[in-house]
Image (cartoon, rainbow, N blue to C red; front, side, top):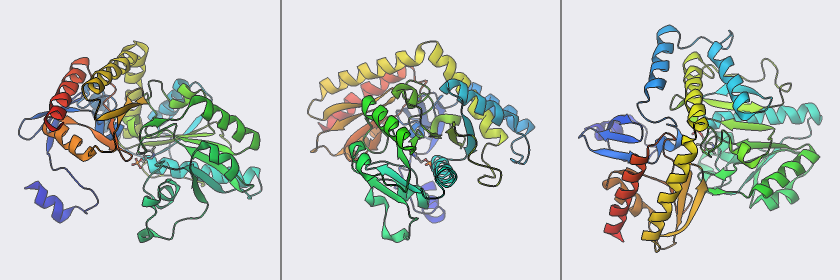
Length: 394
Ligand SMILES: *Cc1c(COP(=O)(O)O)cnc(C)c1O
């Protein structure tokens, strides 16, 4: 019934699966017929503290009962607290601008970088270099920043100037010119195959860029908020980017984005803004999410879950050495690169039929982004179901 309604009234931009989820508990979802699914997707890395999290829903309800929204013309107490919390968890002296999504956070990062180019280099610098197979969003600028030509369809041209992407980090060095203001990278390319860059490679790039006064923007929309096992992947890589963007997991499903930077003096009143960004509801949700995840990390549970998930992946790979070529990823941003001959959509469909939700990344990577609070039982059940599902098609 809703399928026909969807087709009639919702614009056709997604190849949807028409399952109708009604309820969720941590990493378990229930559809309208009562069938349950283990969720290894968390709404693409968004539902960081699990579905139906009572602490989060109570905080949201409490906030909604007093104030949902005012405007950034006035002080927003939870916004101030969330910005301070981000600085504390990251461990650096940074300030934050709040937006509503990852793409919007990256737009903010691009504006901040260009203003930096204007102020510090007399307006000469404006170009942004990104990497092949990156993903930075769907707005007209961030889609151009995305390093995949399949995203730069002529259908939506013309695109803004000043963006180019290069093959790999090594190629960044030779492509900088005196108009380059920033290099934007993901430390683990989420949509590009869940492949972490080498730590030394990133550290070398960071210090090179610093020596040239070219900004390093790290897009942590997917890797941020404990997804990598630490608060930020920048913590794992031990780099201090000029700008970090966050979104997906930050408020557990309430839309939010964040531009985090030590360069507090670049933007001035009027330079940037947002109606919804940083409002009472989303920042209160973000605060609760960070409180929950901070203690989850502190107690050692998050690290244990990462290790346990990894072990289960090893076991699955041993069962299907002809499907899975290589285990990839970091923390709870994981996957398997599959052999070329494997039809990934078949794997995903088989998993779904057997009650497990999984994702695709890049051309041939099966991707897992479970809620960070997923239980051992849910992990066990998920992998058991995957095993059954893949046995049937193998
Ligand atoms: C998801 C994602 C984005 C886009 O975020 P939206 O909230 O969909 O705009 C940008 N960068 C990365 C790395 C992402 O994973």
